Image (cartoon, rainbow, N blue to C red; front, top):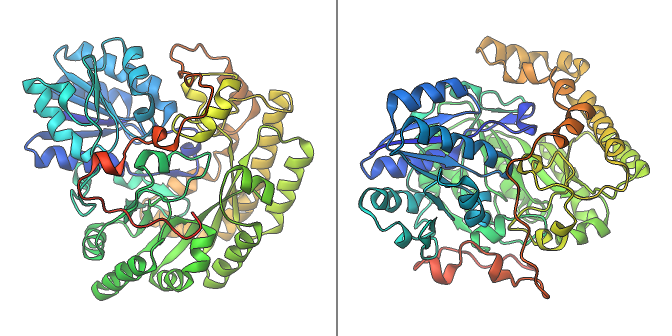
Amino acid sequence: MRVMLVHPSALMYSEIFLRLEPLGLERVAAAARDAGHDVRVVDLQVLSRSLLDRELASYAPEALGISLNYLANIPEAIEIAQRAKAASPGCFVFLGGHSVSFIAEHVLEQADGAVDAIVRGEGEPAVAPLLEAARDGGLASVPGVVCADGRGPAPKLLDSLDHPRPARDLMRKRNRYFIGELDPCASIEFTRGCPWDCSFCSAWTFYGRSYRKASPEAAAEEMASIREPNVFIVDDVAFIRPEHGHGIAAELERRRIRKQYYLETRSDVLLRNEEVFERWARLGLRYMFLGMEALDAEGLDLYRKRVSPDDNFKALERARRMGIMVAINLIVDPAWDEDRFRLVREFALSVPEIVHLTVMTPYPGTEIWHTEARQLTTRDYRLFDIQHAVVPTKLPLEHFYRELVRTQAVLNRKHLGLRNAIGAMSVLGRNLARGQTNFARMLWKFGSVYNVERQMADHRRHVEYELPLPKHSATPPGRQDLFIHTRALSHSRPQADPEPDGV
């Protein structure tokens, strides 16, 4: 079959700080190609909608799949599905991805015939049987699939992260992918899943708290195939198992692979496995994202981070000592007032680290979805991008955004303003010499992306597609009820490690 896979447009946050290659879509593309299909990929983060329309006409896909890792992209995905059906009425259209997995039936109904199936769970093991069923029938028997005939068996977990390797050769304009000054930047996956259970996160509910690892040999072999000088390690928590981090490092050292790296991890993992991070710093680890989420114990307990403020600050000190620049994430509670925003600004200016702000957002698949969703002030998918407030704010909404943008502007001037651009001239010069302009462009884009008028206008847009509300229940759902993948049902040879101590 002729199969087209589409990644939707960039979200608000991605307009400035990063634009990552769609690694999951590349792996699904590889699995479909391995099954004998002709595959084409269109990434609307870097390609135009007009190009997609031209290719729908010229390529005439027999099947079209859309990646939906973010709720905010659902209206766009439904529109793309409608255009695909209009261009090729016989085209089989399916959706898949993290976010849509939790509300598959609802989105299928909203699409009103434009979508034939939705894949819940991991896409690699599902895509070949899905395409076979699209051709021969029996959709409702495919694991993980939701269609007009009902829900199929439980989704399957991928047997091994070693295969399939992402089909990077199908991507166009790879030079448009970057994260901060790492421009251009590829992405790679060493592990999948998270054994922690933070209340605001759906990574653990999606994977059923499983945790799987690629072999060090396969990870290093894939790294050797990446052309870009910079690589973002997309693991939810990097190097939970020190022997795995050391194993990959040893393989990279043996192959003499030198790149610059960016990764995400937790403070307690960094403190527990300090030698691993020191080794990776010698290999080229330059940036680290730490989801601190809150500055005080009360906030950390609220989000069930299972880490103390002392551990967070110790981790920052250790990273500084290793020469690793840390990007801190703090969750903006809609209950914040002016004093709280002021304290956050003072903290952010007192430390050398980069500080990012994300607005607390209840997502389907998270525990706070079931505790906070009935307070929603909007159900517009497009506002569920962690940059808009979707539950009541203590301050009037416009005042809340004014404080939020003011705080973000302070952080922007600290790290990305003209003064810092002059200081980073050597980095800019190297990037521009290679024809890389992503980092340079983002230095001056802040005001056009983050402003109160735009955010308030976003709330006034016509809403055609809305999130469902969670079903009312006298008791909160059990943890197993939140899982997309369950190890007992979806995988005959589970590769999960035991949960970390204290989790």
